[in-house]
Length: 115
Length: 109
Image (cartoon, rainbow over all chains, first blue to last red; front, side):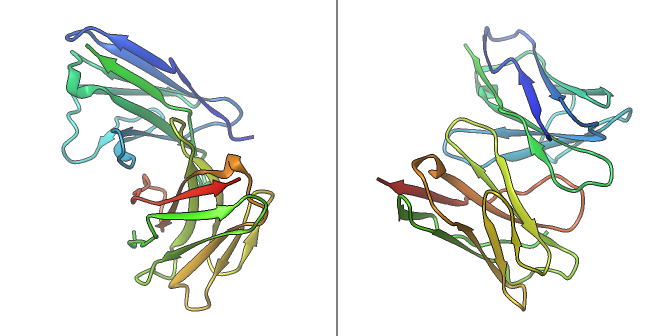
């Protein structure tokens, strides 16, 4: 149980384009999903928290207009990197937890390369 | 959430028990100790968590000292597949996790 998937697993795009990453909880209802970013040889950094049906809460320094998060259902959250630039190249990882449960379960991650 | 301190790296022979320490001297009474691991180029994997009592599951055991200021994650029979970065995280709520640098555990054949 507690399986989280992400799609795509990797994506290469041109600078200036937008990229959408999906995060799905496969066997539980995720009332809260989290988005993290990890640069090479560094730890995961929390970007934002999203509760189903509510606007996402962004961490300090994360541009909400650049990283659009939608959590419209209990099993799906999306992260859209708008007008991507090479410095946005990173490993994006989501996690999810269900209501009343504190343990977060992580997806496999999406590797983004912006040329 | 309380800060944690872990050794940057550890080696362990295959088949032996791997004991990973974590210090969390500023932990509060309602904060849990969580352990995750991240195998190269994958998302973190939940291992175990505990509050006061020692915990065991199919993956590992968690030993928490009586004063709760430190803990040890034990992988009873380490395999090469256990090579990963192990993160000890202390948290008291349902917020996002704060990852430190973790311990890079290398299992030697």
